[in-house]
Image (cartoon, rainbow, N blue to C red; front, top):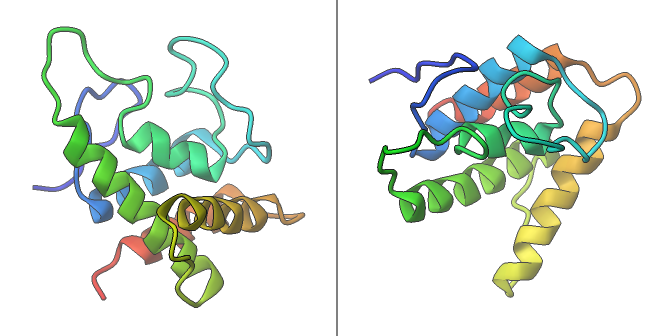
Length: 137
């Protein structure tokens, strides 16, 4: 089933490819914000320009879960972490990781943040990179 992206959507992607695709559409829709500080209040995540890493969080349900609806957060969180890994590899051209899972997660986020913060980076660049990462390999 294709990912359905709208800022109001209560559908939460639960596979790495779907999260990456949803994030690409989200950045294309709201724009790119070149600062890691995005989440400053309820309801703001779905409508404000988004940091690349923040777009993955929004795609994986951060600030979007519907009251009374059940989500498999363990599955979603695993898929989000895999999406971070796939995106970091796509952006750097090589696997990004470490033996320690926490260190690997930090390295991936740093790679994404560095890429996102490059001067002149546009929403179109980010949406394209997310789409490329989402494509089957």
